[in-house]
Image (tube, rainbow, N blue to C red; front, side, top):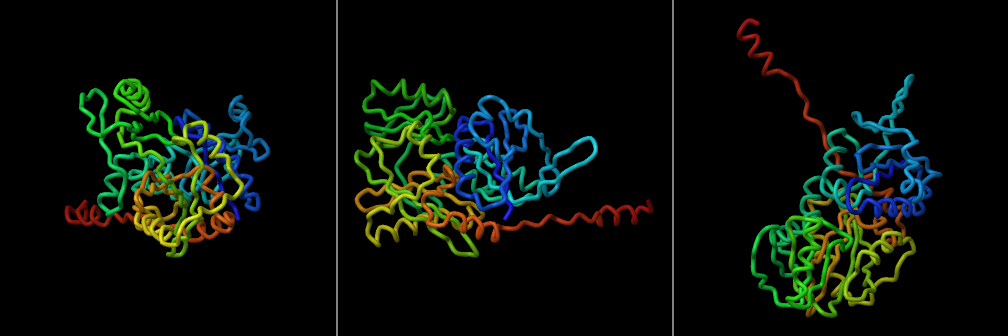
Length: 345
């Protein structure tokens, strides 16, 4: 089966996307893979599979490779004498801005290119953590209490210390701080506002139990991964999460009750259904007093959360065969023709 991995993008998570693409290449080695890199200037390059290594990008060697443009149904490679179309299904592996904010989803939909990844509406509700909270409220999904702060706004924080301060639209724990008392607050706010004009403030829950669950919908049924209990200290900082994106070995399932597993799957289903079809996502949950709280939606998880699935290759193949389809509106100009006929023109 042919599949194109699309990665890179202009975001703070650009390098993480490269790491994920290299890992997924290994995990999907039985596929006929091609690789398209989107650089920081939004130029697309067709990357030689043998050159899929970090230094190809850090040293700028990718710039010597063929540039691609988009046409209906394909990425195209043009030369003086020919045009080659790359019509494979695309796996969107661009983390952060571009990939998770809906930009790439809109572009691929506009050009009628089949892809694995969140659609535009799903991106809106998962990329911005404020809208994730609104989704929770609309779908009766329990989540951590929160406040929103905006740049230039002078507002008293009502959440008792310790708190977590995080940018609204970033992942990988970039710009996130644990604030244990008021003396640490200004520095945390300055750090977070370097990355975003909007922040979330949440209570820091000491010793909280955290569980990760991934899945996707195949032929009308959600296929769940194992439930993972990530090993962490106070929280997963950028360095730990960066390494997390290169994971390829399957992890062990969490030692939890059937009742808790059912609760996690029920919450995941509420998040996923009628919104994330066509995407493999990972939801991160907190469990407090036996109550499941959604912490975060990862619409394009690191390395596609391959390490949570017993047979990731088969999962991707099944998903490719059951992607949601959209049809183009047929434009007929009947209305204009009728007006023209009525006027005798």
